[in-house]
Amino acid sequence: MYRKKLLLHCCCAPDSTVPLEDLPVEGYNVTLYWYGANIHPAEEETRRRRDLLSLASRSNSRVIVEDTFSPPWMEASLPFAEEPEGGRRCAICFRLQLEGAARAAVRLGIGTICTTLTISPHKDEKLINSIGAAAAENHGLAWLPRVFRKKNGFIRSVALSKEFGLYRQSYCGCIFSIRRGEDHEPVSGGETSPGPA
Image (tube, rainbow, N blue to C red; front, side):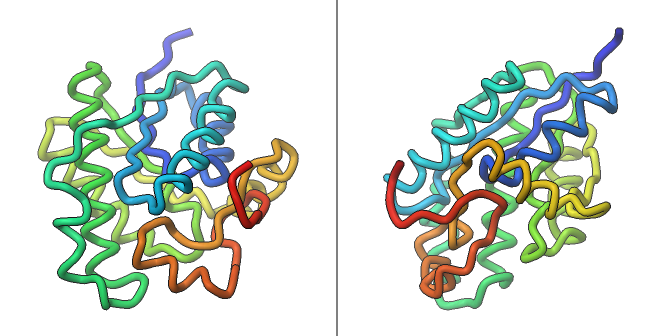
């Protein structure tokens, strides 16, 4: 069976569960992409990356871990540190992550990119898809527009994450969004826990 190559930008393991189930059924050969420069502190990034690798092993999926960040994430986002969640800082963060995914796709010879970010009910799917489409176009790639939270996608991700024992974070990831997570409201589909597993 012919399978189209796709690079899937993964924001975390819980949000990757549904895309990893649905995209192969649609005929995609999925390679996962992890951009961790936006995750703070370092222990949190390690934990989230470890869970993504664990999830990928369940489906024998390859994971590309980004190790080159240009421009540096903190340098780009710091001017917007005081903005609320969902403001310009988030748009910059999405752009940095999706531009990184596009560069990785070019390096790997993968012609289509997509992201798991749209499974979250806390994120603007129109903004994410427009930034992703621009990043793809800038690098001569195709963008696969998806809103993974549709058709009970988020609810499915919660159930799958619990089944797989995935860590559920209480804030988006950056040092500035930790303030939002102080009330420990889960923002993904896994299990909330106060410290590293």
